[in-house]
Length: 137
Image 1 (tube, rainbow, N blue to C red):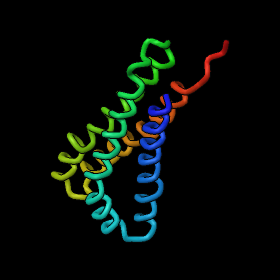
Image 2: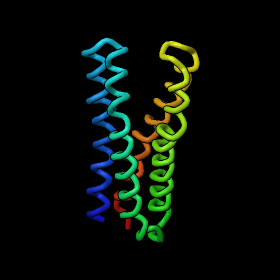
Image 3: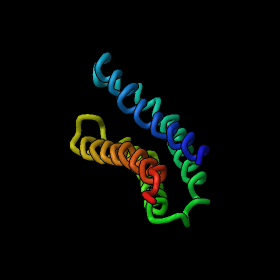
Image 4: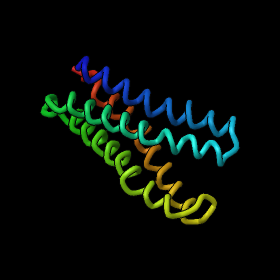
Protein backbone atom coordinates (compact mmCIF):
# COMPACT_ATOMS: atom_id res chain seq x y z
CA UNK A 1 0.00 0.00 0.00
CA UNK A 2 3.01 2.31 0.16
CA UNK A 3 2.97 2.72 -3.63
CA UNK A 4 -0.72 3.54 -3.40
CA UNK A 5 -0.01 6.11 -0.67
CA UNK A 6 2.65 7.75 -2.83
CA UNK A 7 0.49 8.00 -5.96
CA UNK A 8 -2.59 9.03 -4.00
CA UNK A 9 -0.68 11.79 -2.22
CA UNK A 10 0.82 13.03 -5.49
CA UNK A 11 -2.59 12.98 -7.19
CA UNK A 12 -4.28 14.93 -4.41
CA UNK A 13 -1.38 17.39 -4.27
CA UNK A 14 -1.57 18.13 -8.00
CA UNK A 15 -5.36 18.60 -7.90
CA UNK A 16 -5.31 20.88 -4.88
CA UNK A 17 -2.16 22.83 -5.78
CA UNK A 18 -3.27 23.71 -9.29
CA UNK A 19 -6.80 24.64 -8.24
CA UNK A 20 -6.09 26.55 -5.04
CA UNK A 21 -2.47 27.53 -5.61
CA UNK A 22 -1.90 28.25 -9.27
CA UNK A 23 -5.34 29.13 -10.67
CA UNK A 24 -6.54 31.04 -7.62
CA UNK A 25 -3.38 33.15 -7.51
CA UNK A 26 -3.43 33.84 -11.24
CA UNK A 27 -6.94 35.24 -10.95
CA UNK A 28 -5.86 37.24 -7.90
CA UNK A 29 -2.89 38.83 -9.70
CA UNK A 30 -3.93 39.26 -13.34
CA UNK A 31 -7.09 40.63 -14.94
CA UNK A 32 -9.63 37.84 -15.50
CA UNK A 33 -9.10 37.69 -19.26
CA UNK A 34 -5.32 37.30 -18.94
CA UNK A 35 -5.57 34.82 -16.05
CA UNK A 36 -8.03 32.79 -18.14
CA UNK A 37 -5.58 32.70 -21.03
CA UNK A 38 -2.76 31.49 -18.78
CA UNK A 39 -4.84 28.80 -17.06
CA UNK A 40 -6.13 27.65 -20.46
CA UNK A 41 -2.51 27.27 -21.60
CA UNK A 42 -1.72 25.23 -18.46
CA UNK A 43 -4.80 22.98 -18.68
CA UNK A 44 -3.37 20.32 -21.03
CA UNK A 45 -0.45 19.62 -18.68
CA UNK A 46 -2.65 19.79 -15.57
CA UNK A 47 -5.23 17.35 -16.90
CA UNK A 48 -2.61 14.99 -18.34
CA UNK A 49 -0.69 14.81 -15.05
CA UNK A 50 -3.85 14.56 -12.94
CA UNK A 51 -5.36 11.80 -15.07
CA UNK A 52 -2.11 9.82 -15.22
CA UNK A 53 -1.69 10.05 -11.45
CA UNK A 54 -5.31 9.00 -10.99
CA UNK A 55 -4.80 5.96 -13.19
CA UNK A 56 -1.56 5.05 -11.37
CA UNK A 57 -3.31 5.47 -8.01
CA UNK A 58 -6.13 3.20 -9.13
CA UNK A 59 -3.71 0.64 -10.58
CA UNK A 60 -1.81 0.56 -7.27
CA UNK A 61 -5.04 -0.11 -5.34
CA UNK A 62 -6.55 -2.57 -7.82
CA UNK A 63 -4.70 -5.69 -6.49
CA UNK A 64 -6.29 -5.03 -3.07
CA UNK A 65 -9.85 -4.85 -4.42
CA UNK A 66 -10.98 -8.03 -2.64
CA UNK A 67 -10.09 -6.69 0.80
CA UNK A 68 -13.56 -5.34 1.47
CA UNK A 69 -16.12 -2.69 0.79
CA UNK A 70 -13.85 0.21 1.78
CA UNK A 71 -11.37 -0.68 -0.97
CA UNK A 72 -14.16 -1.24 -3.50
CA UNK A 73 -15.70 2.10 -2.57
CA UNK A 74 -12.31 3.80 -2.85
CA UNK A 75 -11.79 2.30 -6.30
CA UNK A 76 -15.23 3.46 -7.43
CA UNK A 77 -14.57 7.01 -6.19
CA UNK A 78 -11.20 7.07 -7.93
CA UNK A 79 -12.64 5.84 -11.23
CA UNK A 80 -15.41 8.44 -11.04
CA UNK A 81 -12.85 11.17 -10.26
CA UNK A 82 -10.74 10.14 -13.27
CA UNK A 83 -13.83 10.10 -15.49
CA UNK A 84 -14.83 13.56 -14.25
CA UNK A 85 -11.35 14.93 -14.93
CA UNK A 86 -11.12 13.29 -18.36
CA UNK A 87 -14.50 14.65 -19.43
CA UNK A 88 -13.28 18.23 -19.05
CA UNK A 89 -10.62 18.23 -21.80
CA UNK A 90 -12.51 15.68 -23.92
CA UNK A 91 -15.97 17.27 -23.91
CA UNK A 92 -16.29 20.47 -21.89
CA UNK A 93 -13.29 22.44 -23.15
CA UNK A 94 -14.02 21.80 -26.85
CA UNK A 95 -17.59 22.99 -26.27
CA UNK A 96 -16.30 26.04 -24.37
CA UNK A 97 -14.09 26.92 -27.34
CA UNK A 98 -17.22 27.48 -29.44
CA UNK A 99 -18.65 29.92 -26.86
CA UNK A 100 -16.80 33.20 -26.32
CA UNK A 101 -16.00 34.12 -22.69
CA UNK A 102 -18.75 36.23 -21.18
CA UNK A 103 -21.57 34.42 -22.99
CA UNK A 104 -24.21 32.34 -21.16
CA UNK A 105 -23.03 29.17 -22.93
CA UNK A 106 -19.46 29.72 -21.78
CA UNK A 107 -20.60 30.44 -18.22
CA UNK A 108 -22.72 27.26 -18.10
CA UNK A 109 -19.89 25.09 -19.42
CA UNK A 110 -17.38 26.75 -17.12
CA UNK A 111 -19.66 25.95 -14.18
CA UNK A 112 -19.87 22.31 -15.25
CA UNK A 113 -16.08 22.19 -15.59
CA UNK A 114 -15.62 23.66 -12.12
CA UNK A 115 -18.14 21.21 -10.63
CA UNK A 116 -16.37 18.22 -12.21
CA UNK A 117 -13.00 19.45 -10.97
CA UNK A 118 -14.45 20.06 -7.48
CA UNK A 119 -15.85 16.53 -7.45
CA UNK A 120 -12.37 15.19 -8.22
CA UNK A 121 -10.82 17.44 -5.56
CA UNK A 122 -13.11 15.87 -2.97
CA UNK A 123 -13.33 12.31 -4.30
CA UNK A 124 -9.56 11.67 -4.53
CA UNK A 125 -8.77 12.35 -0.85
CA UNK A 126 -12.02 10.68 0.25
CA UNK A 127 -10.99 7.55 -1.63
CA UNK A 128 -7.56 7.67 -0.01
CA UNK A 129 -9.10 7.96 3.45
CA UNK A 130 -11.34 4.97 2.73
CA UNK A 131 -8.50 2.86 1.38
CA UNK A 132 -5.98 3.72 4.07
CA UNK A 133 -8.28 3.69 7.12
CA UNK A 134 -7.39 0.95 9.53
CA UNK A 135 -9.96 -1.72 10.09
CA UNK A 136 -11.41 -2.02 13.57
CA UNK A 137 -10.57 -5.43 14.90
